[in-house]
Length: 278
Image 1 (spheres, one colour):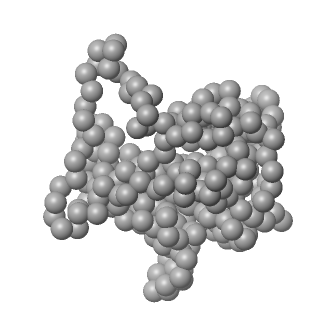
Image 2 (cartoon, one colour; image 1 turned 180 degrees about the vertical axis):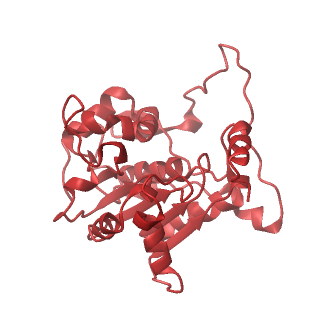
């Protein structure tokens, strides 16, 4: 396997199972109509606002300690999603904002990188507001894409810190790959996260899906009700329509509704005002 120059990735360490065991799903009893325990609300006091780095929440990789990655579903839709992230190579997550589509995908990507299932993480999404042209923004390509990838990198920085996340970008362990720059590439042993794909065109979707190579996984997220290009140019809807009635072995579609929103309750209320309460 490719050797990394990154000091925090120890490729001589023991087998993945001895480094990081996938946390058992808390939702295994949900389908038996047993409610899932919600995460306890902490007091807003200065002392308890943030969790401590106790032994239970830290994993040691090489010579460094990092926050442990746990895929803990909070509802039955997330439970199914986590199961598919573990078992399938290509997963579509479709539904409203706040349902954990992107968060759980990023957590699974970090988990896969740490356990050496993949050697890099690819991040992509349509940049509709500039029609895939990033020249007017300052800086290099990563800087130009920063406004669109910030929610994803917030998660990386929580688990690696700002400095090491930037170093991983420089080393190519994390790569930002805009759709307009992907043609002709094949991603091997990579975890590909394609966010906001309701704004991709059918041609972009086909091009992206055919970039997957040996040992790679791909997660595509989107909300069909928040498209900016219309349904006639909606690559996500186009592919899901083509997929209907077919059952490819390694492709899965996970659907979320407003009742699966796990952000602040106001998010669900706002979506209801916009008529997304069905």
